[in-house]
Length: 89
Image (tube, rainbow, N blue to C red; front, top):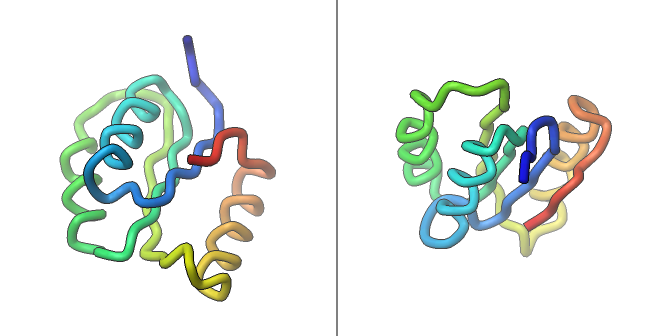
């Protein structure tokens, strides 16, 4: 299944299953935004994925999804840049 051009937001994407999902969606050509609370882990994942060549986007936000004041600006930015979110994990 091709995910090329699909806008994906993955919360808890800095490690474990979340990080695996970030990698797979990105490899499949999705425009991937991912969040987590630990910026160092978020950066490490971005560094790991930077050599994958595709037309996708990969961006992260430091964000605590239990705090709406932390989430709302990030959602607003994604919607402003992409106009939609197709997949939310």
